[in-house]
Length: 311
Image (cartoon, rainbow, N blue to C red; front, side):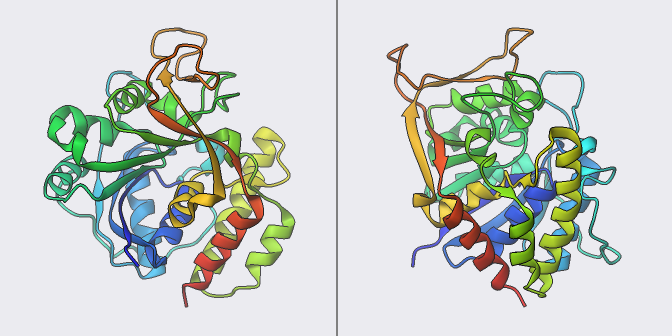
């Protein structure tokens, strides 16, 4: 089997942590490195969270610290109401001994992509700042990217404003850079991630697996489910970020629509909206595969298989 080589750019984050877990042990995925950005919490905290997840699961994957603020916007948004003070509240981790790499995440992206055979997929499950900065720093990496798969956006309603989803809102300018780069993107937005709610039945199913990954999943989702219910009223938290990895493991898990997508970086009311031309009104060349549906049963099977890959 030819593994899909990926760089996972994330802002852990409960759902990012599960995306790391899912990617690291799947035989279809070769996780080259984890790059970290500010988003769900500050950069210092998201970096520690990525290291803690790797250490807890025994993963020998390098972690690179990246950008701590948006490309242009002054204020860094975080999601402490959803992910807690640490950004990964719930699990109790042992004292941290795993260290991050000395190279900046943007430079790691540039160097790794330039040295590649054009066979690396970049997966972003947080704000797209690191990737956009790498593209601006070294445009030569753009044709080297096999595919960009992002968790972000929505062709319907947002979750931070009526128009905007969190990851895009945090740094819409970065998303604009990615969507105008000339590379095709697969956009995994709220339209599908809101369908994979971690309901009590899912918790019971995963709690049966008392290995490291099963315990981490349950500890993460207990807290995440609680805050999602408090903020949005969900019966279970939507497991956003791992859908990107599930798609790379089995593309049939998603139904996508190929279309032209623009990022709103100008208006006040709709800043950060992903304007997806689902009906081809503008007659412009498509730049994205937008996820419009998900096989929920298949997704949870992929998650359970991911948990079973650990001891």
